[in-house]
Length: 363
Image (cartoon, rainbow, N blue to C red; front, side, top):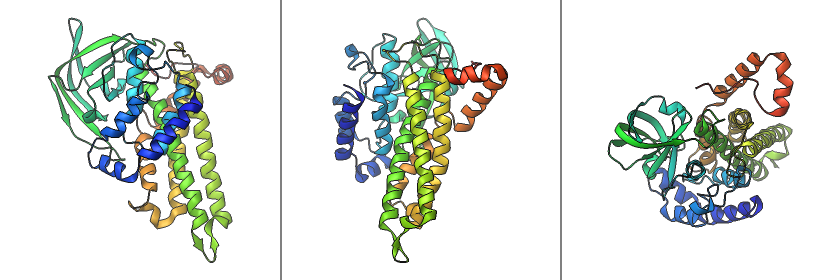
């Protein structure tokens, strides 16, 4: 299965199954069980995992159409997070649990007390705003020390406090009281924060899909809305705004695609450019979301700010995802610091090789 077959398959599936009513019910707290079963049965949730674990060992470039489709269709499911978790487990020869999975970044885990207990760890503390937690059975945690850990969210010592992100999707606090987790070595020792990096690249790719939806909506509205006897899209000011939005989308798409090409997978275990390319993608996607959502809403005028119009489902996701796994400012600051420390002579070689002259993430 290549990326073109995946793109056709996910587009057909999501076009048929994802609609406004389903998204609204998910925002009200109902888990889309039927849609999850269809996505899971088609193999999309374990696309990156080994065949023995239900996947096809795809690389991230092959999965890119799936990630963008999640944003374009505003799919209210933890598909990307399950892909990341299943890859981490499968690449480390760990069993992959059934059902939806989520991930917890290394930055979030810093708030926990982590104590060894034989072959397991005892975790105590609060994990803030864990995506999709209430709908997931397990979470893969980045420990920040070269290890990952699998946490049973239904096990003893795990309590949840419900919360929502800006898209009104689950973002729950997990209160842990000596909760047991099973640690395992990260499959990619060169990635200092693998969950943070993979999560940021996935969110950047999903943002590309949401930007495409916003662009399509704005273009269509500019064709349909007539003012002073002409479609507003015939006016130069509107055309300039749409051209700028198109440019934001195109540049974000290229950056996210390059990041996916550089991410580690079962086919590409070594990924020296992953962190650098992910940083660029998250910065570019975040900046595109800021300007792109403003333009899309300006073109639509007052109607674009109403809940009844479809535009809000994409723009609210863009606003939520731009801060997941590091905002654009977070990544931009670390890129800048790395290049300053690398000095002038290291700038061009690092840029052309897509490898920062100094580590971007310091444990």
